[in-house]
Image 1: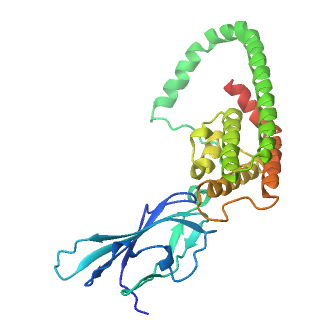
Image 2: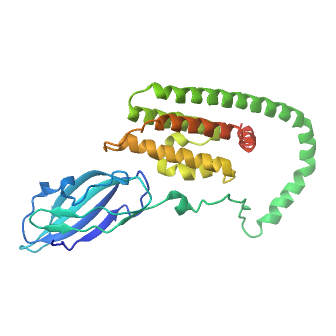
Image 3: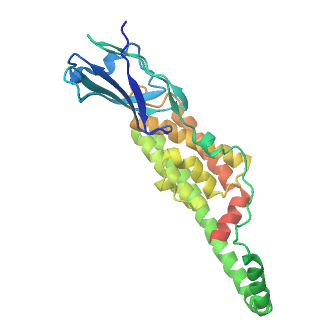
Length: 298
């Protein structure tokens, strides 16, 4: 077996589960190679679609500046489904040689952001000399505000109670409608449509419940979004809930976007996913600190 000397690169250099990436291998040849000769059948071993999905394979001809040589780029567009190193099998170009790929690294959002425990409060950063000015100004107005606060405190308490009660009713209605919509998904027949609707239902629920734009976030951005939505104060139960929701989004992204024959729910898998999501919602709703935060946001 003749191996071709190549130069390998990946674009983008940093990518995550569900991101589209390109693996490029550049090489020179003194013989002409048909650009249409590249396909998935050229791999010397079967592809593992549980680790990645091959979207496109292209052999592109370039220029070397030398009349007796041609320059080629083998471009493989793929989407990874697991973190860590991914090794593609060798790629054989008939009548020319074989390309051996180096392993590529799929990054983990959790490891990149070092989200391993709860984040503590940090004091605000102030310019030197401004602390005394700030506290001096507050002290000058404190007597005036004491009288003003005593006049409005009762009114403020009533408004807070009303807004908090209204928000709790809105949360309860959202919870009821979300669970009802999730249960209806079992009546659908298309796994891809179920996956799309499942993510839409959960994103809308989370956006209302945590007051954060989850409907505008990609699955690869969900871990950071949860951390920002909870200000890094989520307890262990809620953190486990967020991880479970992210894993379900990754799974349904695979079913939605993969062309693989196994991109579908296994027997009993959908029911298990829906039951897990309903349990996750119950845990989120029982979190007292979340309710207090929601009351303040109101």
